[in-house]
Length: 340
Length: 255
Image (cartoon, rainbow over all chains, first blue to last red; front, top):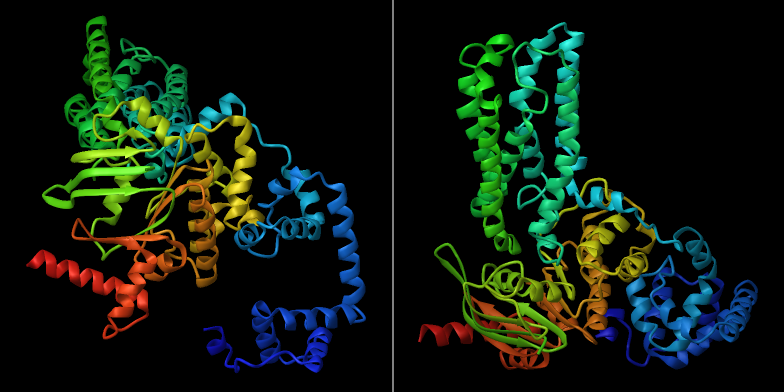
């Protein structure tokens, strides 16, 4: 097959004159190509070319220098370090090829020595493993939600509420808007951080021991850890509306909605679960609350029954517990890919 | 056997993707060939533990992992798995090092070894120089190599690759096959592909799937022999062997 491709007869060999021109770098491209192909298989010609290159005025001393360096290193280096360097990329050639052909000890050593400069610089920058602190790991594990559009949305809502209230002079009338918006934000964050449609690494993550419900809950916790303080603080700095529920009144509804979306998602997939719960919130809370008026005192009066009072808050707490129990019962459904 | 399935059936709604399949795989590189939609991806997904079987047993590395299997035991198998799905994405801001490191973390590798393991895996796919480049700046072929790096970062005992050579240029494919053979010396590697030359170059044996059933099993040499006997079909011997085996199976099923 090789003969066919090179287009040369089976008896063709490298002559001394061609070898000399090749070593001097003056051989035509097609000749050089044929020669390189041929010496892969023909040991005798490889020896002819080698001696020609060693005799070259520029290449000769260079090769002698490399040879000396290799020998010096081979003597100095402890034997066991050779194996670990079999994987070292020489920086120019394909690492895979090197690894495979480098099974013989001598080849491996040559690779290592020839790239001594690269290896040394590499050790300087990458020798110390980038160890992450525990907190950084949690944020890292939190996945896409904490780096994506959701975080921007959260900041816009929290800062926007404050800006509208004080900057635009809307004062206390912004508070009910924040109150009905806040509970769905963590829900959206969780929906955007895990699942077939949200996580680009979803299928890979599902095949790992850390994937599934544990990863989902880690990310949900990270979403809550960011959104709860941000939204509660924003609520707390807004001017107080007379008779309205406090800045923390959205917390239990928010938790219940998030858990409801996760529990529902275990049946129908994360995205559908979150969308259904969000739609239900819009239809059964926001729409009736806004019936009297879209903002200000009218909206506050409309929204209050869903937030204010120990009985209502207990209801949300009971809902959250029920959803958490359902989620626990459904935990094994997260062991495999959700069906699209 | 590193992987063994018995009576494996997978359904997607009303369609049967795999129909009572029995297979086993020992250490080495195994090719999974078949027409599009034959059930290759369904089989790889079950072997990667991401899809549950609708019926049958799935035993990986000596542990049953099928539907209803113990969660902890499945997790212990997953620590020793490598999986490259046909389609995968990455987080926009991640570098190659962070991407592979993140998967190493998901595989619950020992934290002290992750940094070195990540560098080794990235070197093995020939991306050592680009390890701190953002994944989004890489070409399609390089992204696929990053995918291969995340699959081998934990030196898996069972490596599952779904169409791994898609998007690789010919030179990269040659390098990739060499890597497969090297990993296959100690691990069980199962590669699904529609490129018969991948199988010829890298796999010791071949499983041919057609319409959810096993159409042919044999060594790569046997499939090539089959092709040598079927001179009238076009293409090289292994392509002819593939076609001949597929047609023989269709005749047997039709009869």
